[in-house]
Image (cartoon, rainbow, N blue to C red; front, side, top):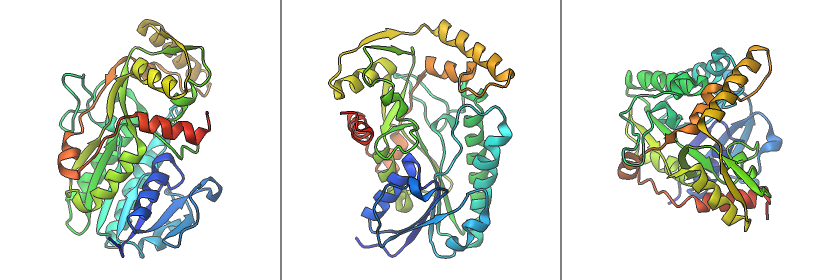
Length: 328
């Protein structure tokens, strides 16, 4: 059905942002995308799409665009795991997000969708999946990134619930795999298996989802999402070994799998902490490596029921990533 609404999308050059824009265009929305580097945007020109150069931390670069839109989808975030100071995350993930919501309310935006993190909620096991009612758990309660996304979500929903002019919603995807991974970001896990005769894998697992499924549900959230609500967008709950087996099968590759002991990973993490103390910029830390040792599993029941969230097997996301990275 033709749309006459315009959507403002931040983080337009990232894995999720690009997929969201592509899906919005398929549904005939007009789109204004905010990004910092136009050269990193892979979609073809489209008369429904306008790209502006700016920074989410600098409202002067986007405030004029807000006057022309009815919907805001806030995807942009600092996700790097090698940052040592919470203030660095807070500047973008919390303060800039709060300011964007403030500007959106002032400009009478109809719907504001914040993209949070699944790890703002507590994870679970295969028999007792994490959901929107469970508080953040260790080790993520020590993760500066996860804490920044939790603070942002809490503030955005608090401000959102204090008014009724703008519908404010949070969606919380799990680990996304698929095409348009320009950095690359999460797709590094697929690249790490390519042409490897031996694959060393951690003892834990997580919820893997095709980024396309997340993008499609975000589009549905515009009309189906309820004010003040959060929705986990999870996918297939797999151990890392199960995931890597799917990757090697998709690559037509024979590999041996060797499990890394939990104790060894955590020890390496503490060495990473010491390296950070000495000023080395590294993503290796005790907290980050502890996250690889847990079953980081979630339910998508709420999103499936209320947003018509559809989760396809992660094989589709793996295939999309392999094609994007031109691995075969």
